[in-house]
Amino acid sequence: MTRQDFQIGDEISVTGKWIPRTPGGLFRKSPDSSELLKEWEDIHSEARASDGVLQTEINHAIGEDAVLVHHVFRNVDALLNYFGETASAHAEALLAVASPQLHLIRGIDVPDTVAQALSSKSVPIGIGNYAYGFVRDYAEADPASAIHATAKWTCKPGSTDETLAELKHWWQQANSHALEHEPGLRRFEVYEAKGEHAVITHDTFESTEDLKFHLTKGAANKFKKEIDKIAVPENYYFRGPVEWMIRTYSKFMHLPATYSTIGSNYTGPTGSMSSGTKD
Image 1: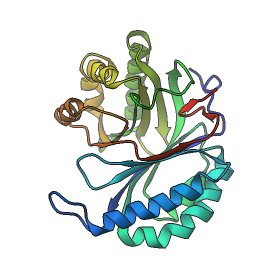
Image 2: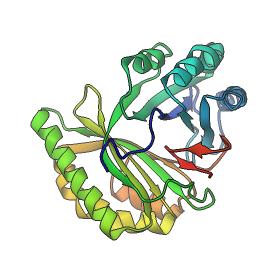
Image 3: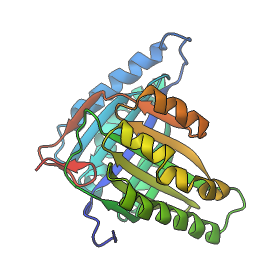
């Protein structure tokens, strides 16, 4: 799918992670965790009231004291308004109890103003501009079973532009293989990271079984050796009902993964082209 065929238009997606500043015990969350969730619930309430926010989620991490947040903005102006008003109003209280981890930003052509807006809030970011991929169906996947995976792969130290070209080549091969052999993979998108020898990937699977096939017999397994030679996964953010078996298996694949259940969430009346339409 070329950039011209890709239908997200001006939408920008942000997927990121927050952890409490004070760690909890072995079987309990820290006091900061409660404050972290409270601040995000307040932010969530305000975000969903904005016409420019097409989707917003606060997802509770599994097996660790953290949350994954996900937003889809209608356009750059909507994102800048959100970070200039809603995020700014809560920044001091949120940063007092929590630390932002990597936030992955995806769009067709994400302007530098977006990086400036997030960096001013002390949020570490990776920005990706769409390179290639496919979308089988722009309709919303069943939230009860669908799994969304957003990740960043960075070339190993000493890499060059040629290394990045090779990394993009192998992801292109994986893309073509998945399109032909993995009907349960609804979306497979690759974004070139701005200013880095890296790519950001985003996949939507119909179910855990489809994710399992992808990891064990599909594109992820077929091209793993080639990709592992030149790049390492920095972060994998999974949103949706991933079964424990897959979570265990991913450890053997050395994926630095964060898994989350579905927490507070809101999707506008029509959905979005980035995560699925409701029409």
